[in-house]
Image (tube, rainbow, N blue to C red):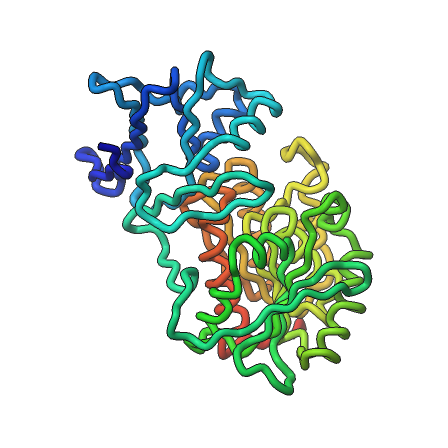
Length: 374
């Protein structure tokens, strides 16, 4: 009988858990466990061996991870025939195309896009609560509409009972992921119903196409389009505010970089930036030398903007953690209003969907007017 992940307290340290994943099946020669970002780290150094399950005497496959008790991660299993998969990009894409969720997982699954299978989600007991993520049947429902603005696809979520204005406004980058895959409308409705955010017009901007590397790379033309075309349109059509203090832009990875850049480049329109796992190494591809962290250097040397920030990054994000901490230190030294959080997870929507709700509540909550620079 297959079982969900077995979680026990580490006898040597109660701050950790021993998590055992199991796969039953005779139809494979091995099983690779894909624990988000944790497995990726070893793939980047060319060795997936630590994530290959071991065959047990009863014919099952299993692997045990030692994880801190606040860890959260999406995960999948990849049974394979023949040799274990390699670590080249084509090998890895093949794995991602065919990996599947744990058939006996405990939590609701994380949906995927591009025809891939959903992921299971592991949330250990001390992982941050995510009270706004799941759909609640007892809250008033808003509605979502699809539009095209300045040649860009934008899904607009309007709060329940929407009328008049002005309303707070949130711009979410990679909107097709949030709207079409992750059902962020449930999160927005829950936040509004609980009074965690005021009724908010949410603009979900599609940015996951071939133009994404150009749009989400501290591109002034893209941010100007949002500021000068999208926000005025939303004000006219839906009563979205023109007050930067009630406007937030949010993004993940390159979108997190872009959210912070929008507050730097156009603070008179974007008074609040929500960055999750921001790619602040940009533009240097090595992510390590003197050419990296352009935006952080602008914040360090430029005039202080009238903007507030919510920045979070995962402790497992070895490629981003140092750069996000550097941004934190610069913003703090320059006197910015900053909320900074490190979660024990990776580059993972299983973590981001909770962090997005927390960030919106922080930035759009009751007392959120940006401090004006002296």
